[in-house]
Image 1: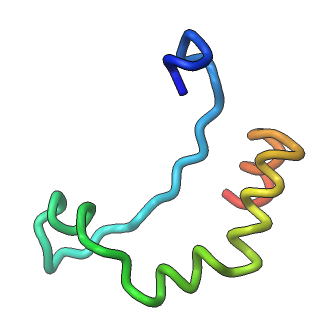
Image 2: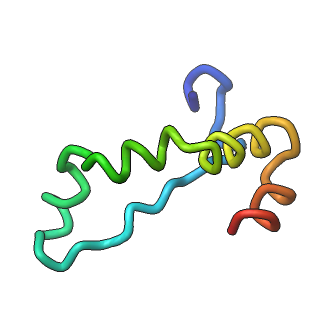
Length: 66
């Protein structure tokens, strides 16, 4: 994206993954998603967040979902 638009001045939507103390952080972050997380990413709530980010921008989305 940075190369395509010639800079890094754009909004980013970051998705937190939480933390599981049973694993070293690097291994947890790089592990495969479990069924619960996949279901959440496919949920209406998550789709609404993405839709709001695209249609309404970062401020409206953060105020509504953060």
